[in-house]
Image 1 (cartoon, helix red, strand yellow):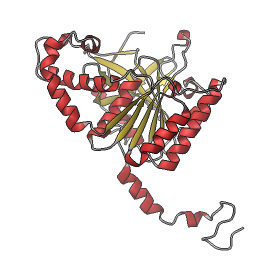
Image 2 (cartoon, helix red, strand yellow):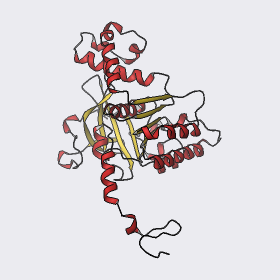
Image 3 (cartoon, helix red, strand yellow):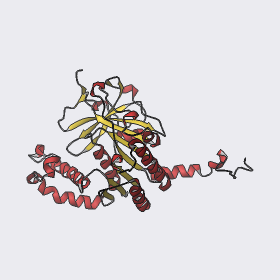
Length: 338
């Protein structure tokens, strides 16, 4: 029962009263927006808002960490403070991945005669210093200049939801983005893994709402039956209880685009799909983004298509949606013969 537009009983308030200051709040939210710096995601999702809880999933080895790290590093380069919880990685792994990407770009830009030998695995073991050595200082200086805002945390022997909550609350006032990579490396004493994961995500969502800082959660996908020949994950493929995807505000999946091929050895066509978006709804399209294995980043243009059964069919040029600013039909790779 209400006695006037400004009063509330038991948490209820008249809807018009809640609109006071709404326009200002919305405009301020736009000013605080971050970007994925991945063209398809920015075009469709319009960026990252405060309080977003973004679930990012892919099969093992598909590049979840590379994508999450690219998002984190690009925002750090723009002067934003980013806190990255590396719960799976070994110490210095994120820094090494980032440094290698810088060196690789410089090696290829210089047209080094042996640039085709370059690969991350050999570089990690120090086997490419004859090529990369001269660029080592350049990469170190660039990271010092541009990436001091990227703050990394590597887990110890045990890392629980309580540890995460305390760590997030300790840094949120200085943070513009938090990345947890990944969800399934948070320890729990609960024997029911699905329930524990659901409770963990709910706790993280509560934290996100309290602190007003977006959080990206990297997550495993369940192993699928290879006979199903499923081209891209669905919400049901996220490992854990259904509460994980219900609580998230955005859910993004990436997968190797096995049905398309590239004419460049260093480009890996990658399916990218928005399975859930609380603001605008799930995307009816699946993008093919071009991942450059040399620089560990995505090219600016992407293709769009729809999946029917076991096939991805590119859209016609006249069907291009208005939001697809960086869509390019020229980026469509040739489909392999079924």
